[in-house]
Image (cartoon, rainbow, N blue to C red; front, side):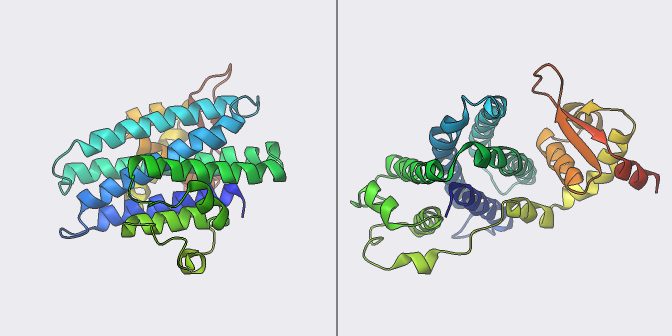
Length: 288
């Protein structure tokens, strides 16, 4: 197993929790409890990424600017997590709408990592270094879990957990046991086959949101028509004109780009502003 699928597998676990939160009824598995789990899992994932994958790529000219942008997105996600956590009534319509926007922001971030960063990382990092990165990511993730939840991993040494679990099992077993509440019996039982599932393809995470993203589909036509009126424009301007949350607008643009209706890129001169333009196929779709 390689680090690229391990990171994508983390994304799928996080997306699954997001969907559980939106579907959760009141009761034992309330939104409050699920949101706290999501907050932990997302922070562990981002810290592990920062300290392994991002560190390995931040000095390479091919990825330096992208890493800077993704680090900024990590900060934005962290800030929004804090704002969502500060709302007492997480069953309200207002909180639900805000959490949906947060989900779209995550969707865009994960999409960029899997379709922009990871393909470059595979070109830059050779097979041997990739295995070191796999170990580093898993070790950083387990250390984050150990620091924030001291009793969760029991007395099992971090190195022993990493060595004992191949590939995606590290993330899957840690995630599953974390939701159950303990990893103390990790080395006693044969857990790998029990918890390990087939690793996802790199674009699977966006499929989760796309399948249930009624809000984005509802606004896709408006976004496409707005883009078609201009030669090239910033995504933020589309968001402002249509009064859509920026996270949702990014998710819609990403979906339109997957359909070949628009193309996106960055402004000239090292600008970090994401630009979007209509394609011939997109213009034909608007006209019909």
